[in-house]
Image 1: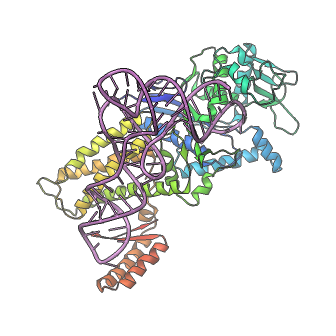
Image 2: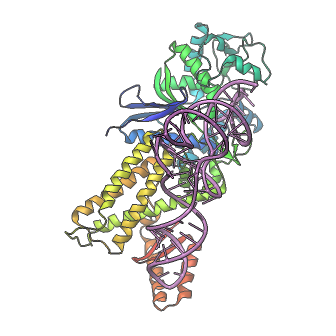
Image 3: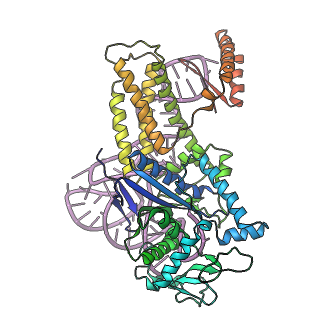
Length: 492
RNA sequence: GGCGACAUAGCCAAGUGGUAAGGCCGAGGUCUGCAAAACCUCUAUCCCCGGUCCGAUUCCGGGUGUCGCCUCCA
């Protein structure tokens, strides 16, 4: 298949054609979390986004290498440890566990590696040493080491800032031991009560920024394809990563080739952030909504657009997703009915022929949408288009309105596969129904008994009993639907 | 103060130089004991003012509004 994949590169502020560093391979570094808190829905957005991107590349036939770090040595973690009379290790491990719990619920595939700062000290220290040796960094008397932004004449190229412009609005207290107000710490000398590691500059720990450079270079080499995260990381985090990485390598075209940044999730149209306190953790939302719904909610908007989180919005996502789920179930049951060999094939023409051609077209347009900077919003729209076609076909089929040929039976399997292919990239409907296969048929048998009793009631036009059974089951989480093809039940 | 993004129907949200996907909600209809699901039909000239163009919602300029970054933050 010939295609052109375009991605919006923050570095150039334009959509560019994607050309991998290595033919047939894609290397991705996504900035992970600082595990001092359970992840909130805003944290989840980039991880779900990148999960779709890597699924997409994999589907396109690329060999994908995906790295995501944990910044487990950090001021906030240390602060939390002190507050709780605990250790940085305990705090970070607990929150990393929480991270995986949340992301697993959102059906986010695991990265190939999850490097941690605490496990990357040698690489971090040698990188700082390189910067000192080359004259890009300097040490203070107390043992701090700073990066000198003035030595990097390309500093500011990602965020589009000039050092002079930034000074004007700097409201922070300037540390006058630094050569330039924007110089940032590569290494922080140890203070009492803090974890520290030995280094050529004395005991201390890495500053923020250097760890991501060291970890990405360690796992992906000096030149790799993608680097991403939330757009609040553009400055200073990613700007600084670029500066220190390219200066240490000595090549202004090294490091990540494409920079992708997520828009924010807002609450009442204000940025959600841990520091502002207006956030919802994924764990909390999971108490009320399935992970699949949360995931779908995140993907219904393009990754670069802002996204407002609210109860109404997530409810709407749930309703919409159910619509797709109904079609997913419908096509699956049609296919299994055909496979069960209980239908008669005919050799005549059938009335729903065009679903086959249409579904191929829809699949193509789905890929076109994804090729355009991973436009999941548009791509999901295509799934709804296919859902409508499937519903029409399945209604006709189950209603006995169409006859199918043996040839059609192959084609309808293809329709099911197309829907499944799109679902897989978006990352929904992958979990097998626990009700159908898992429980050794007991629930199945019980349901048959109940439905049979209710059928008797209905036959006797005893609507009170029939409706009571349906209502009570609904309360218990079992939905009954009387369809022209018989009673269907599902567990919510 | 510097830099940037966005402004599309009741709501959410794609998109295009030639009068605008999809979803939710709502109205009517088909089906149905009722309900559900599903299907059909209906609901926008794209913030305002200029400019370029045969033609702009889409390009350029100005304005207004909202948000973000410049400090930890996905």
